[in-house]
Length: 101
Image (tube, rainbow, N blue to C red):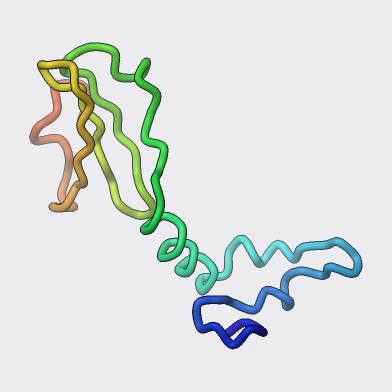
């Protein structure tokens, strides 16, 4: 819990030394901070998926992730862009063209 008493704030004073301007590298691997980032950043905000140039034609697709969730970005037959969450967690290979597996 942070100094503010807010349960959503992790006390980073054990990792950040503002007096000397240093950051302990463990801040990048602490599982509590990681889980907080997953909840408060990736699960709550817009995420960049890909540039339209990466899916130029109908049928083009791009694989990406939002936090720990896999997504596929597809340009459909009408040229619209769609993003689908991989909710089965098995494999994308069933619906992808040969060579994309």
